[in-house]
Amino acid sequence: MVLSWTRGRVFRRARKGKELSSGSDLEIEIAIPTHFRCPVTLDMMKDPVTMATGITYDRDSIEKWIESGNRTCPVTKTELTSFEMIPNHSIRRMIQDWCVEHRSHGIERIPTPRIPVTPYEVTDTCTRILSAAQHGDENKCVELVRKIKAWGKESERNKRCIVVNGAALALANAFNIFSRGVVEKNVVVLDEILGALTWMRPLSEDGRSVLGSVSSIGCMVWFMNGKQLATRQNAALLLKEMRVEALVKCEGVFEALVNMVKEPVGNASSKACLSTIFKLLVNSSGSNRGVARERFVELGLVSVLLELLVDAERGVCEKALGVLDCLCDCKQGVEMAKSNALTLPLVIKKLLRVSELSSSFAVSVLWKVCDKTEEGVLIEALQIGVFHKLLVLLQVGCAEGTKEKATELLKLFNGCRSKAECVDSSLDFKHLKNPSN
Image (cartoon, rainbow, N blue to C red; front, top):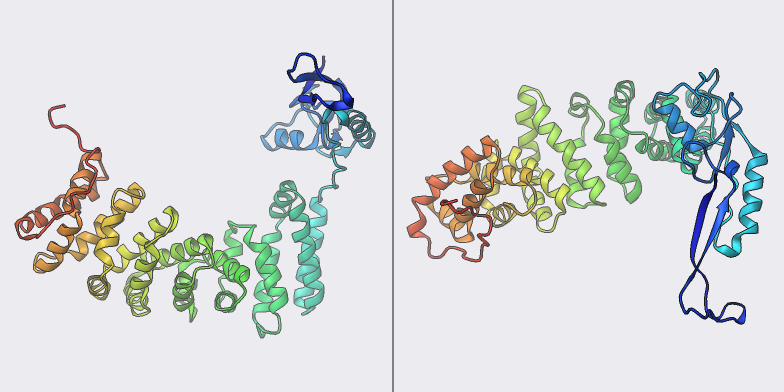
């Protein structure tokens, strides 16, 4: 049995000075030898390895087979007594030689694969990292952390091996140890560990617990207030992993989060900071929740969110509206929203334009901001076109809670429609259903 490798446009008119009489492209079929193909995928092997049963597979294919829960050899169907994969260098060299021989037909030579990292190498390196951290050997720790990061860059398989074998917890402990000292003195090693931990998320409960110390969170805040963009983003991503109870105990967290949203490094860090803020506003216990809302309002987060909403992409927009909705649960938040000229135009604009979640948050914000005693606010919203947008929202469908708020708002706005000088008529009514249907 053979597998054909078809390479179109192999010969062109001018190749070797000959012209093809047919004027069309000639296709050449190259037969790949059977023993070069992986028995699982039937594709040519790039990293052939031999299992305990003596059958050779492509490493990626047999790893996926085993990770799926299979414990037998795909070919012989016998139980695998060992999962050790021995590189088959002979077959790999034969495949490479064959590729070189047929390179004129567009077949590229497979690169010599790097030997993947083993669980023993990972655990041994983690042990040495902890030892170096405990002895305060920053240089040795930096060297070992960079070694782990280099392994991770080589392949996804290496990343999985590193994470599964407890590297995140070891690095979290090392980060916690070095964070207890002067951050400026240990900035290099802390930065290296921070960069490695970001691609090991989500962290385990043990990892979150270790990094939840006041010194560790304080160190992340210090990095977020720094000037290195990559480090600021890494710190924001890692801070998102922390528990609410740990965050509220550390000074400077609220200020750092607001500054990161105000001066965004990128969408990833903006979303991470907004998620952390939302978590603080929703999951804080009792009095801490009220304190968190008031503190964020004092820091000017309402204005920052509205400026962010002007041209935010979907993910950022959803989270920004969610945070704004939470801030409007307190009196100061509502007052700040009402006093900002961007609130009504931006919130109404986001209705039906981003996502169902964004629309639900937008309706909730309007429901909290629009008061029947403030006729001017109602008229302004009507002039922007809120009435028709709410009608469309009810027509296309929404969650029950959103539907109730939208209905209340429509009743509220209906009493002021005659007083509105003009209502935006540019809205597209294609979403409205015909009542007769």
